[in-house]
Image (cartoon, rainbow, N blue to C red; front, side, top):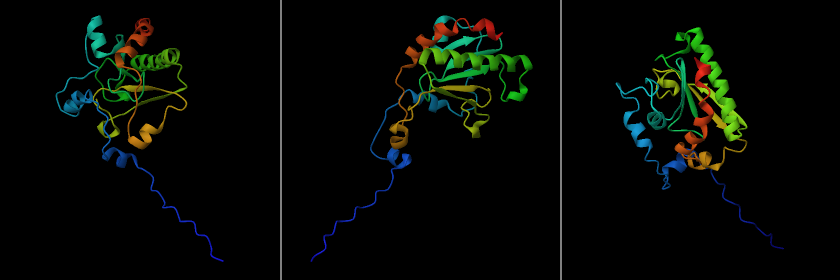
Length: 191
């Protein structure tokens, strides 16, 4: 009696994100070009250092709130919808250089940002942290800032894994329009 043989299946190698990104797939993100042209160049203007701004300039810079000690702005190159950056007004590179009042204002602003993002986006969680120094990933290493990134259960889908790509489902201007009214009342509390 002849034995029936089932052909062995070839074992598939898992697709690595870097392999997927090197293939023919493309995701066009021309808005990143402006950042890439200036990233790491000496003498570029600090995005966190500015005086009093009118409404049009605040919107252009994505500034949601700016008090005398600290500020909140949307990240122009977000990891997720509602990705905020919180910074002291003084141009400092590290937290030990902050005065006690600045540390208190920044901590209050981080807690307030989480509350307002939760209200606006119904988030399930957050990533909150700072990158100190260029080698740690800071795009603006000379001006200390914290990132507040809203997260949702299941938001890590197949795109970052298979295509090394993040999907941002809301335009920055739409996010600004949603959050700006919520942050209007915050300015007085961070002085």
